[in-house]
Length: 310
Image 1 (tube, helix red, strand yellow):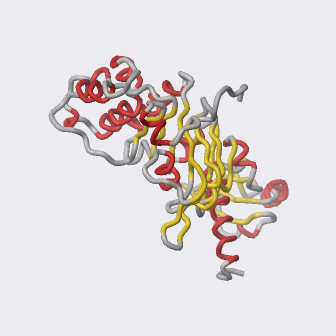
Image 2 (tube, rainbow, N blue to C red):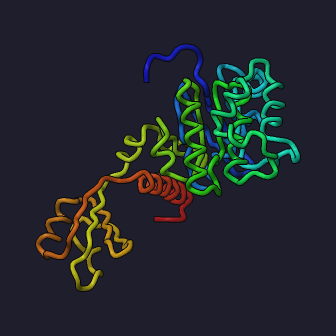
Image 3 (cartoon, one colour):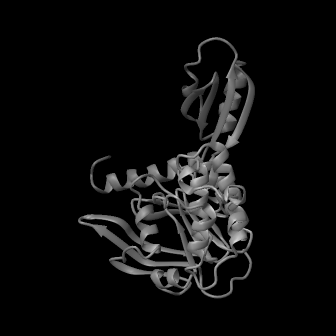
């Protein structure tokens, strides 16, 4: 990243939020800089939604501080610095897309021009349709447009493409990327790891209320040792490969064997000696594999501290 000017877009300092005896967020320190596109990843119950709720000013932390451009989140929201697209929210019936977006943008002091909002969200062609007659993908793009209407410096997107088909997801991401290219900051949570891999400058992984990894997708992948050796077996049984040198696990996908290994050289040498394959590929750890390893590692450590594993 280049030189940063002004306060960071987001700053969590020692943030804790508990529900009874459960710490949903457990001492998070986190800074997001202006202009970054950041993916927030974590398994269900990791604390993502709680962190986003505090970022949007929906409830305060029990300990620590959350700031958006050096302001409390609710003040940043009122000033138009912060926009949000949440998973839920019903549309007002019997109004057109144009009418709804224009109504919302007029509640801000310095909103985006109506035509610019519609273009960013790819809604220009459906601007005169009633919002309650839209497809799921179109309705989600309307929610995105409402989040952009006030021309915020930061937009927060909570599972923005959940339940959308592939084409709708692609269209929504095109709008998000156009918004980010204007120099704005994007923070999104998602369960579609390929979205994080393709679109995020930076990935933050949360597990058990704590940040367990933070970096570029390449840096996140490098945190997990090992490689994947995949091939098409040349006849004969497909069992026994898990016992090859270095192999820690084996999967079969559509006739293709995938071996997770800590020593790909030894694994490939043993395969070559057996002359048991065609179409061999050796690759590094993917984001999904790294995510699973990092979050499982954290969970295993928590259980060990509780004395539930040995």
